[in-house]
Amino acid sequence: MKEKKLRQLAQAAIIAALYVALTVIFAPIGFGEVQVRIAEMLTILPIFTPAAIGGLFVGCILGNLFGGAIVVDVIFGSIATLIGAIGTYALRNRQPYIAVLPPIISNTIIVPLILRYAYHVDLPVWIMMLTVGAGEVVSCGLLGLLLYKGVITQKAKIFPE
Image (cartoon, rainbow, N blue to C red):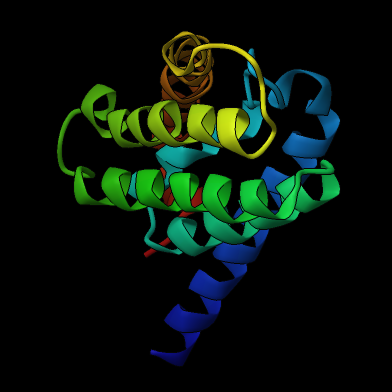
């Protein structure tokens, strides 16, 4: 039991570190009213381990901090990713293209509201929902499903029971 908890803690830490690294590396396209946050592809990982939920949440907090986000964005942007990760975990026994929907939906709704009311971006919220949503489809949908395909072939090595 202790070994399993330690393994999950290590998995969460690795996922958080990957999220931070991808957020910082791809910061120029991962923030703003038109964004593709490459790190969001990792929101597929709760299909494989519940440790990904905490790892994604902590990684998003740190990624937003290192990316220069304001406090409101750090809090609510990270909550959007947390909601998405929990939703993916809840749908882990469904088809992967269904399991990627919660992070797409949560970020499509929450991030534009942050942009409008915290950053005072002068665009209609519905337009930012389209642009952020499209970016989420690319990162969570396309890249996430590609990551899923890669992980599923190596699942036993990457996420041992």
